[in-house]
Each structure stands twice: as C-alpha cells, then as structure tokens.
Length: 177
Image (cartoon, rainbow, N blue to C red; front, side, top):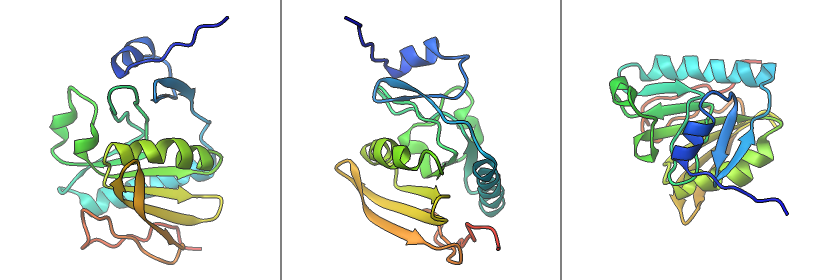
C-alpha cells in the first residue's frame, strides 16, 4: 500500500525550492499547466496596466508565491500588494498583504474555480479577478466569507473594471478587438 504524504508550507519550500511551476494546495503538490500564448499575453497586459495605474500606490508581482499557512502556497498570475516593495525582500506575501489577486485561466479554469477560489476566500483575500479566456469574460469575486465569495460579477470585454482597493481607477481589462 502506498503512503500519501501531505506537505506543510515550510516543508514544501525546502523540498521544492528548485522545482519550477509547482504549487502547494491543501498539502498536495500540483504541477502547473504550461502557459500558452493567450495566457502569457493577458498576464503581460494586465501587469502593464496595473503597474501603470498603481505606480506608487501598490506593489504588483507576477507569478510569485503566496503563503497560505499551514499547507498552501499557490502562485497566482498577478498579486497587487500593500507597499512598500521592501517588505517582501525576506518573505513571500501573505493574505494580509493582498489587495487584489488575479488568475488568468483557459485550460485551468475549472481547477482555478474549484480549488483555488475557495482557498483564497478562506484566506480572506478581498478581491480575486479570474480572467476566463474560454468565454472572454472577467469574473470578479469579492466579499469572502465562510470559504466562498458572496459577490460575483461577470464583465464583458467592453466593460472596464475598478479594483475594490482603488475605486477611482478604471481599467480596460480586455484588449481592443
């Protein structure tokens, strides 16, 4: 009979330090899907938009670990964090640092909805954007409570979005056709 081993964040960081594209979710290690061109483009686009709009107001990190103790460490596509950048010099961001989290999904859409969104809600991440490349929609999740988001909005490509933490900013999340 095989033995199943569950990792805690600290063990995962030691054991998988040099292994690319793996995430720890609820104690289990997952190999992440390869990034396709549409996914890579959308991450780069949103990174550029967020950096420009939030310069001096927030820190934007791309595909960086987020510590969700005791047993999860996903790597969201984008994290918008409380400044200053120096606070992350010796540690990975934690839920209390996160203003906005963005996942871009095509092949991983169901996995992100079923596995990651509940984790983010349980951790109290105030806002998650799920860029649904399959249907060309932006799914905006807010109001985390009891392991799920109470507010879900679907935005078409023509609808701009304003981050909850920065309501004065309006971003065209989708590229022009």
